[in-house]
Figure 1: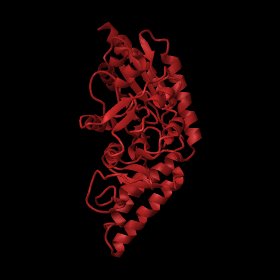
Figure 2: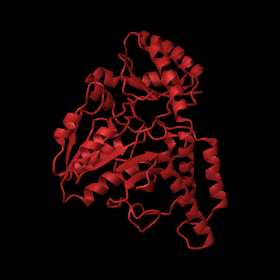
Figure 3: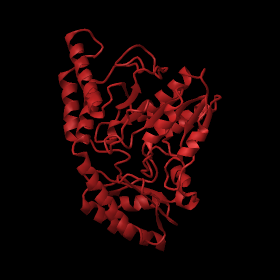
Figure 4: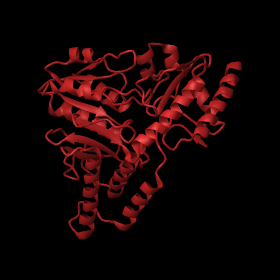
Length: 373
């Protein structure tokens, strides 16, 4: 099997799974209980939280555990909108956001909120001058992802944060699901950060919302204090320990991992770029983990299944996306044909060159066969 869909999800690291199993088996108590079994569980969570803060250098942020990035995104967007509607109902976002950002924003728009989309530069980065022009006194939230999940385009998060900071009544949220554990982006000037474990070899079902401790929002899930007043429910000690372990392992030797991925990406690009009717959509602002291209005249799902027949696995759009047209590719290229025919190859530090060679070989074979039909 050749797996090239790491941006959708990653296989679980065995050491992470072992940590999860150990906590499940050796620590059966409820972390909210007052007896020894409960307090020992609570200490595991405290230690895991401390490690996450140290790894990300975020001593002034609260770590809120959620079921995943989708819940984290919904929590901050709806939580800010509900708590601060008296300040205004204006929100700014980008055309590159995940559906778990777009959907709650659409919900808010249908309930009287004003949502603006910032313009993009040719390389896919946010036009900072346009962002400045969109900012208003009644803007309460700017939500822009650090890295787009389909194109891999990295946004100038530090510069965006500086612009938002000039408006003290506005908060800055970044969905960093495709960046944390992969590349280093400082988050000290961001008010809210979302991410999830299964993007960096952790388990599904556990995510994080980082929130500046000084900020108060309305919870998405009510029911009393758990690890945080902002997310009720019995905490999963095992999942929380596992995400801490996964993050630590992901950040080890990070520069070497990135360089390995970059070489594979460059090699793939060199062997694809001259193929007739194939257009590379990723730009020089894309992280090397994601390689997006369009194949004019071939449906993405047709190519996906053709490669699948050779035990090679890629994706079309983001795993959570809907519809036949990639909104991200359309926003970047303004070309509907390319947006209808895009596929994504996503690489990780465990990907081997021989796997890229096999992908290139069978991609060319499948491309020729599909064009003869």
